[in-house]
Image (tube, rainbow, N blue to C red; front, side, top):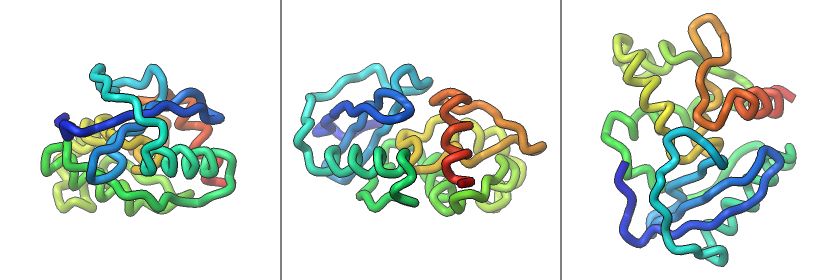
Length: 162
């Protein structure tokens, strides 16, 4: 994953635990829960007063408290490959309260044989929650891997079902 050289970061506390946010000149480019798999080891300059990071923290906390149903943030998903970016854009179209499967997501991309590649791209989603990778379930409806942890995935799905 490539990040813009002018990327900055901030941390916030949420009902689901501490979160690190990152923003580039193009918008929010990272949202990782503490201890999340695939979070970059790289750290950028702290910029807690950066407007995109402040707004992302505000909207995320509102969302997790059930006070907001979606996000209105500029996103920079350019750090992924073209395939990853297509998966992340498809994730943005998965409606709240209507989980999908990896296979269905692959079919949405007109690439039904790419289930594993779709799963890998979902797992590398750099903007967790805002790009709702938690809405993807196994083919049998089971909770499958979530880089932020299955407890968080369960909590997010329960919040959205309410």
